[in-house]
Amino acid sequence: MQGPSSNKADSMSSAETTCDASTIVHGAIADKADLEARLHELTRAWGLTPLGENIAYLWLTKAATDSTGNLSRLRKWALMQLNHQRHPSNMSSWQRGCPNVLPGLRAQPVWRNHDMFPWIKTLEAAFPLIRKELLDLKNDPTGFQPYRAPTWAGVRPAADGIGSVSHDAGDWNVYYLFLHDVDYAAQRARCPITTALLQSIPHQYEHAFFSALAPKTHITKHHGPTNKKLRVHLPLVVPSGDACRLRVGDDVIVVKEGECFVFDDSFEHEAWNEHASQSRLVLVLDVWHPDFSAPEVKFFQFLRKAQLRLERKASENDADGFYQILQDAHALPTNVDAIFANGI
Image 1 (tube, rainbow, N blue to C red):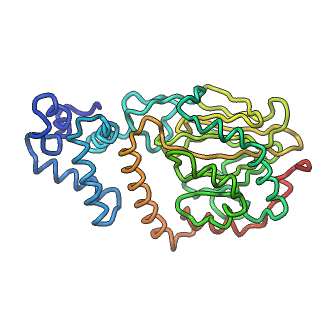
Image 2 (cartoon, rainbow, N blue to C red):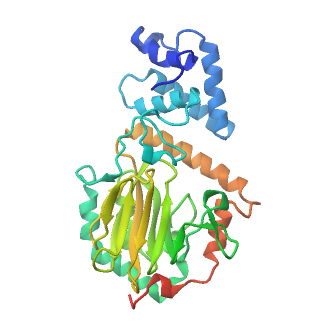
Image 3 (spheres, one colour):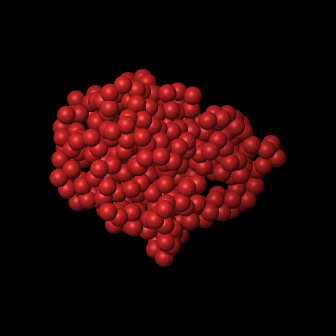
């Protein structure tokens, strides 16, 4: 990890080359008290509860002296935070708009080698069953809602005043199964096979939904929130030809029914359904980046859940808060024609 050479945080790296782990205190020899104070300051900046701060601090001190390599990415990330470095020095230019890029993770727009995702074959084999559960929702599509984000996260405020939209043509609706610890148990109950498959996936990020692009829809270029995860699409209903495409960085995917693809949505990306009359429906799910060790996933899960709880509490009286927008969008009338266009 690179940072200013005068920064005391660099001693977390240099100490390991001169002493064994038993002599390293939080990865530093000199200015131990100063580094301890800075680590506590870092955990406070994450907005955690006092208990959460203590837990995070213990993780950081463990990462500083870890010799197994299991916490090396956490350690590099902590160094980046301590050095007030916004982005990794070797980050792809396509990731520049992503607000949270961690160092030490392989960065490629599309992951065409699925060997490290053996569960994808299981998902593709279940394509007919998942597709049927999705299409059965047409009988009662009330769980679908327009995709919305807070106004500060987008450039196009929604015409109805509820957050912002991410498309400049057409319509985009979603049916959430897992999202930010919101209770979607009732919606999952209507899709038991899909839910069971999702829950069987190792290191699922707990973010999954059905996505419906109406005919002539364009989702404009944007970035996901972080590179900690990869995104998987299982296309369920796709018009023939090349009307449905996804661009990730400088790579373009032509979407095909039943064929999963994996991409890193921290890269700039955009999507099209240019068919004149038929919707495009896919199952979307996120998984933790495969370069993370199991202990690192555990730490970042803890941190993410703690911050989501605080964000939810903070947005209780905020009309433009993420959770309030989710609730308000859910109450909007369902546009069945946009979701299941052309007699799907």
